[in-house]
Image (cartoon, rainbow, N blue to C red; front, side, top):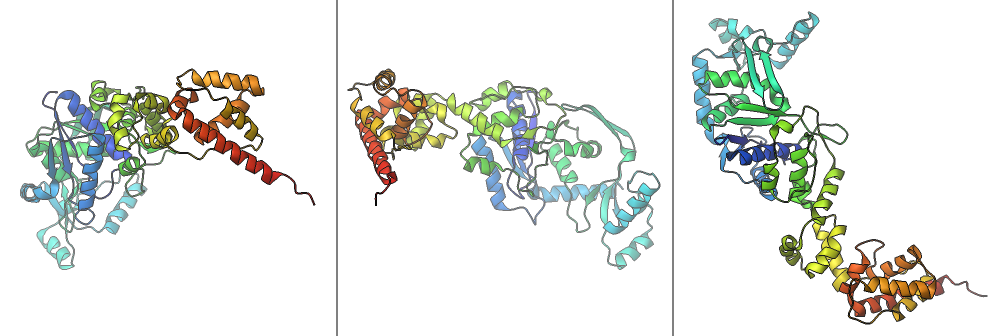
Length: 463
């Protein structure tokens, strides 16, 4: 485990969605716990759709989550190496030319199904004579190239799925080179895994069948197959698949929504396991408890509501020293007492600016009921003199209850609306000393005046 080397190999053809980044995170945590290396490899062989801005976006997403990488590589820069392997496989007869069109291949598959046969390629390309190939090419056809599998039982011990095996005779010889000369995923991936000494490949279960082919190709090329782990694919809350093409929730969306990167990490690292999802403040702490063996076969669902709740829990537990630099950046550092008063009401860290304005700035006081005007004037007159502390709120409201007969919501809600402008929020026992007597008195009087004006406007007009 000390020499573990993993790779996260996104295609820069779009923005990373939460399913992509979960795979990257799991690879990172595995490498960190093993004291190994995390390689960021851009599988950018799709030259038509790969874009520099997506490369930048992937780097930004990883950095935002704290997922640093030890090495970076681009498959496109290794094209000569891949081409050399292609020529070697052709020379050895392991890549063979095929000329069927997609329509012809589909026709073959339909006939096989009708006969109750598995729809696998019949290796017709292997039996073509030189004259037949020349005739097909004279028709304007260009060959695609298939890898000739050895028919054998291919087995591996998957770190998530357990013992796996495929009988390669039941698989079609895979196309490794398209008719236009471009390479499919399989060959560059295997060659690069060998050359980069990748020891563990952790990816989605949609690659399970590919694994049998890749193990055989890796051995043929003189490499040692890596240890594989195939994670169940994450779905949205409705059970639908996630994809760049469908515009599934992207990491950039989560970042712009003001979510905490460690809330994202903590949730995605536990989805698909039986482990409790709880706030974690550092990646090292997350890595300490990480165990790939805890992942199960059921498809986990990503629910944004779960992430929102975890995000709030993380903020509620954040201490002042950790929050202080971010408070300063928002010009909302009201000191430890302020942070302790408001953090339990935060859903996003940026919400703290609103409560800083409530405590130390100006708000628009409210008096929802015109009948509250008199009560608020009484409340203003009953305000205790400073200094104030945590007991001031109960002393003041106790006196108001005795003087007015109000209690419960009828007592507390008009005061909250007048003092904060909001119907809910931090405990006023903690907030009131921060607001201070001068601001509290001004807000109560303004709210009372507004309530009186509303009452006058609602009075019937006499003819």
